[in-house]
Image 1: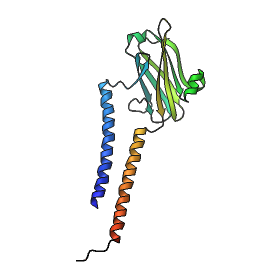
Image 2: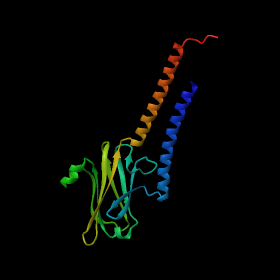
Image 3: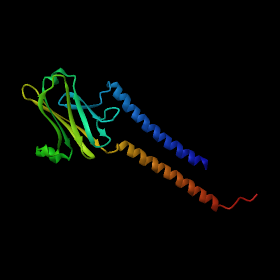
Image 4: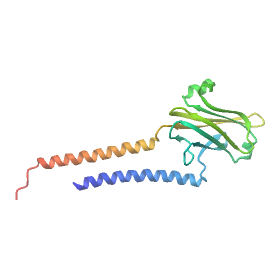
Amino acid sequence: MIGIGRLAAALTLGIMQLGARAEAQDTSLMDMNMNMGCMLMAGTHEMQVSVYRSGAMDDSCQDIPSPGPAVITLSSASKELRDMTAEVRIVRDTGAGTAASGNLDPVTLAYLPPKNYPTGVITLTAIFDEPGKYAVLVTVRDAKDMAMSGRLGMTVGQASRQWIFFFILSGVIAAAAFGYYFWEQRRKKKLPAASG
């Protein structure tokens, strides 16, 4: 009977280790990329996106833990991108309908009009007023007025799906182990004692 409890504990521990390994792999992958954080592609040009919150120990990007004010920084080491104008908009992501209509003003939280950023760093402040999905939209234009756009989606105040799956799976395994344990106990009580 002790074997079932050990099996349930081993399965739960195994799932926890898999989650920790996946998180460690994500971290090591970021370290291999020189801790570049989230990347946004505007055409063929890469921009690093960081989102800083008051009181946070480090930047977050695609999974912001709670609503509130934030500073969004976009940066690029590309000399070519520094010579272009960049337009940046932070919007509430309401689906494809808003983008298709072309009028983003009703869902815009922060906006920077087209401008050159010779240092390669763009900073703007936005207030994420409620939990939900948001997006950083960037449009860059060269001297010939060729436009390239990029988009980075993010969530605010929503738990990561990976952790939700982990907790659900752990709960199912624990419930199955306890259910089996109690079923086995009832079954043993019903068996007649062996005569000797």
